[in-house]
Image 1 (cartoon, rainbow, N blue to C red):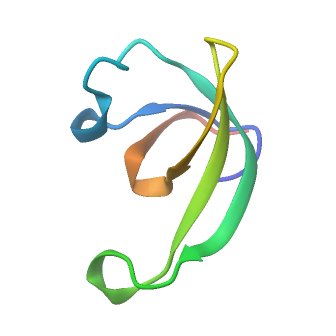
Image 2 (image 1 turned 90 degrees about the vertical axis):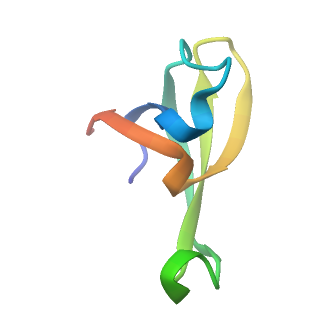
Length: 67
């Protein structure tokens, strides 16, 4: 995942946020050092179509279009 990618929440994480679309504006590589399957995971900052920002682990998001 990289800056400029268009994303939405992955199905497992969507809940009531399924209509949100966002653009990745920052990537913090290796932020979660001991994530699933004992490897690091990045955290990304997303600007959502609701004009809000959030920070999410990469496995919470699905890429719709790469930059």
